[in-house]
Structures are given as C-alpha cells and as structure tokens.
Image 1 (cartoon, rainbow, N blue to C red):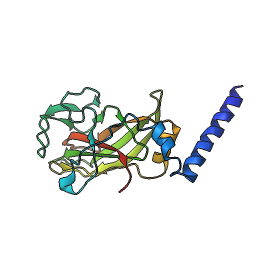
Image 2 (image 1 turned 90 degrees about the vertical axis):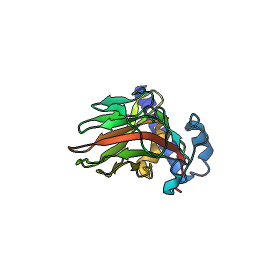
Image 3 (image 1 turned 135 degrees about the vertical axis):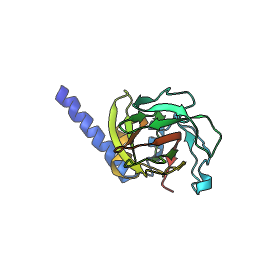
Image 4 (image 1 turned 120 degrees about the horizontal axis):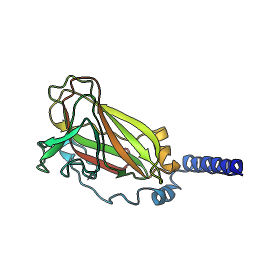
Length: 208
C-alpha cells in the first residue's frame, strides 16, 4: 500500500512539473491560486532614486524596529543606528564575523522573489555578505535552500544589489508546495562590520 501511494505521489509530481514547464502561461492562474495569496497586493518604489522602479514592501520587522522579533539571530544583534536615506527608524542589524541572521517568514509570489535592503560594511575586511533563501512548505518543513548572491564588502551605507530567484530549481520550488521563505544573512570570513537595515521584498518580480 505504501509503495502504491508513493508511486501515485511521484506520478502526480512529475505531471505537475510537466504541466508547468510545457504551458506556463496557461497555468498562471493555477500558480496564483497556490501561492502568493497572502502577499501584499501593492508596494512602493523605495529604490527609485537608484533607478530601480520595482514595487517593494517591507518584510515583517524588516526595519528591526521591533527588536529581534521574528528574527533568528546567532551572534548577530539589533543595534542603535539607521540607514541614512530614509528616516524610517532608529535600529539596524549588526552582523560580526561568525554570525548568522534569519529574517521573519515572508510570502512568495507566483513568479520570482526579489530581495533588496540597505547595507554597510565600512572598514570591514571580510569577504562579503552571503544571502540565502530558505524555502518552507505547508507543514513548515524546509524544502530547499537557495544561494542568491554575495554583497560586496567594505562600503558605506548603500542599497544592496537586487537579488532574485531567476532560473531552474528556484522556480520549481513553489510547485513542490513552497508557500513562504526566510532570508538568511551570513558574513564571509573575518573582519566583518556589516550592518543591515530595511529588508524589502518584491514577491511579484517578473525579471523586468
């Protein structure tokens, strides 16, 4: 009996993959119904001064103004000090070498997920800040971890590069039942002076 159900699950999964890959436009409504229903329907162009006109929303406690609520911190801490571009708060995240921070749970959309934030590593001698996304399923189980990129070290406050989930496995994760994600931040090497503030998400990013 277990073997029978296992075979049915494999066939159903393969069928869903084939359906999505062969006719993505026709199945956009199906994906919209499966994921993205808990995402904000609009955002703001917070990075327009840097010629990024996508609409982002602030991730839950993305500005650290509620302390570490929702975050999982190992060696990292919430400290006084804010990014200088918007008077949106008074706190930020400090990430010394050897630390790791996991953001609160954020929703994912039916297309791709773009992430952007403000960062500073002035005086740092580390190798940058690694960004990963941990994907979760309906039962709060980890379905996969994606390496999204590494932010350049040793600079003052500035918007980080835009990180998105373009390509392959990342786009298949929602089909496996992924409904939410958390953003993992880890300095690479020694001498980190990383500070992060205002983590923004665009769950509807289409690559434009």
